[in-house]
Amino acid sequence: SENKAASSTSVAEVSKVFDTILVLDFGSQYSHLITRRLREFNVYAEMLPCTQKISELTWKPKGVILSGGPYSVYAEGAPHVDHDVFKLDVPILGICYGMQELAWINGKNVARGEKREYGPATLHVVDKSSPLFEGVDNSIVWMSHGDKLNGLPTGFKTIATSNNSPYCGIASETKPIYGIQFHPEVTHSAKGKILLKNFAINICKASQNWTMENFIDTEINRIRTIVGPTAEVIGAVSGGVDSTVAAKLMKEAIGNRFHAIMVDNGVLRMNEAENVKKNLGEGLGINLTVIDASEEFLTKLKGVTDPEKKRKIIGNTFIHVFEREAERIKPKDGDEIEFLLQGTLYPDVIESISFKGPSQTIKTHHNVGGLLDNMKLKLIEPLRELFKDEVRHLGELLGIPHDLVWRHPFPGPGIAIRVLGEVTKEQVAIARKADYIYIEEIVNAGLYDKISQAFACLLPVKSVGVMGDQRTYEQVIALRAIETTDFMTADWFPFEHGFLKKVASRIVNEVDGVARVTYDITSKPPATVEWE
Ligand code: GLN
Image 1: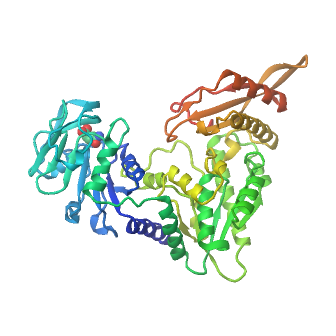
Image 2: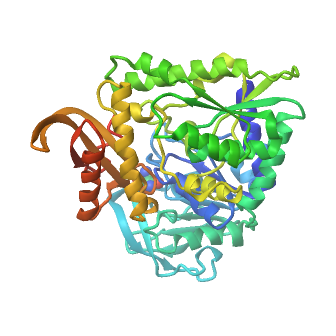
Image 3: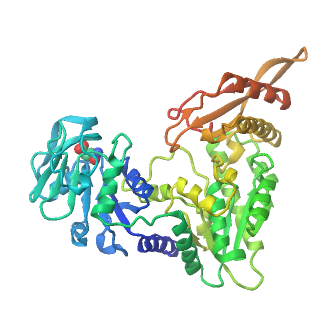
């Protein structure tokens, strides 16, 4: 379809501008880290599923990395790399499963080991002249495998060993093809990043030009090329960092031909619509329309208590309102709105192309995906190559205020999933005010940037209290604050008692309808970050 065409063109063009290391993903939980590490030293890397047909690539990689994976190369149905990868005539590095795959192709000498090896090992470099291991000898490397090589693959030599792995590192006798049994991409491998750097820079000769400064120029040109001289683009903004950065980039590329729409769904944070108007509209000069649809959302949410139903109602109502407003702002000069901006990030792209297929749906995500089917718009995704920290860096370079760039994530269904039970205007007001006080205190205590996400939740239970000698019977606020690097796992933030005491006292005193405050001390897993 045309949507797909627009997005795949965009991927290809970045790889044409920046020297690119191709990471072929065999399904390891660490695969995306390989890409991340390479980009950390300014080498662009792109991950594709291991089933990628090499002849269908529209760009030529500077080198290829075969990732680890949960399968056994000798098992029936195990994934295998397209052998055309060797015809590219570029350096190749196989990591764990990737190395076993190289061995399988060159003699099939791979089998189940007597014991699994999981955890640290010390690397002993045998071939001191190997450019792969410059500066990594004797370091701790991280192992995670059950299969092993039973001998050297044809045409290969041993370049490193460890106590349990006689073939810890191998290299082709004639070509820059390497295999390593351990995982250099995880931080437990002390000098893993140096190894990847050796491969990308010294062996593949990739240039270190992947910087956000360079990306801005490339991206603005790319947007102009894709959109053309007259077409218009529409996109939703939420006040969060991703949509703000995407919108600002569009504004830089095509000015007022980009139309940003902010839908006030009635479950936003306190003063959010006004803040977005001020920051994005006035501050960043984005062509913005704010729609107050709060009554419409709250009416649809009436009587609904099931979290998944809430999410679906909000997602669908959003699409409905957005489409209606898009119709209304049709440009008068007859030019059509042709594109829909979406702030998709690279982890979502990885998830959707993953060899393993999309993982289990724990919660339905609120996104505007459904818009495409109805609106016949082509998708434009300027952030689809970027990781979150790259988006933040980009935001800072684009002059977006620090507070906005470093804002905690906020869920699409907003306060509706932080008001447990039925969502009413009154309940939203309570949750919103408690949240406002909590965040204000976090900022005042200088803790905002140390916490990954914090919010207040309104529980649908009543509890007895006493205020001014009067019995009260009111609701409970639960506070949540977590620390995480990737939101896949998280731990609760260890506030000092004095801080919690102050917040609790302010909330009970200042928010009508609350008699009690609790602090959530559950990690993820088993709990999720949000309560619903
Ligand atoms: N499944 C293979 C093994 O157990 C590869 C593991 C991996 O790539 N981490 O050896």
